[in-house]
Length: 363
Image 1: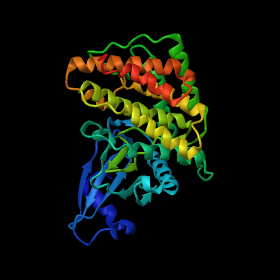
Image 2 (image 1 turned 30 degrees about the vertical axis):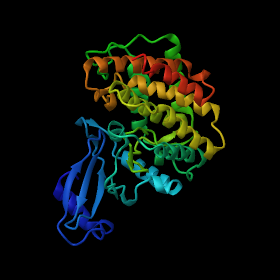
Image 3 (image 1 turned 135 degrees about the horizontal axis):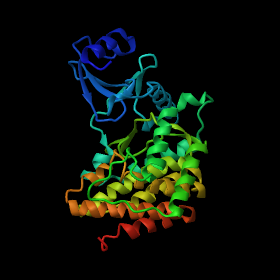
Image 4 (image 1 turned 180 degrees about the vertical axis):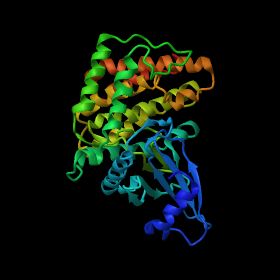
């Protein structure tokens, strides 16, 4: 279901979608540049719109030579639907789920933009990070109804995360890696590799709660002070620190861009607002969540330097000299976070590590 005619025919024969629109001609356009799935905006003559997301039996980015189970989108439907029950104001409305056709329809987030894009353009209200702290605390506090594990997890996608975050980046000359010509990755210490392996084991074995699995600034949309969480196909039962660490890493990638583009930094109030909201909801910040978040943050920063899916904030730095320095800074920060995450005892200690690397006077 990838052509305009196929989508229109599907909508016409699907009551929940056909009645959504006025009886006028429909228009279909593919939007987004996601790696996994096809995303279409469908509209009628009166500008009423919805988003249709479809999982082809292969990876969208690489085409039919890279097969991928279509059931991944069923996992996303289930997870977003569950998140909607526990955090309704943070999840788009879902209008229709079709597990047989491997597609679902959801609210068109008109006038929303990716948090990742907004990082380049404007000062982000601290309330955005407060809400993200509240959302992650809610995941920690709530447990979904008992289901078969496969209901909320896709083993193939979980394995992709394992390989591209914890394994491939640390195999010399691995064919899956893409190193920029201006960057030469450092050899990693035995302690770094030992801790990456510890984080991998946590990722594989810890079943703390149902997490998003790919919660970065490209899977969060904002409008004024509102947030919308999308793209949950990587969800699984795992350590909450994985979601928190991934999000923190992408906040910091935006801050590295800001540093080298000579704009005001805001990582201190941002990180503080996030953790303060989390602490208020949970009644404290459990030490294991803080430490694991710091470790997973370092792992995410490290791998984005060498995997094909590069960090967009780093790629957006205009000067090649500045971009080279940004890569080195990011690697040095990632190394310290991974090597020392088990010794971080407070949010302030984490901020102090970040501050040492993002010091304006140094750069």
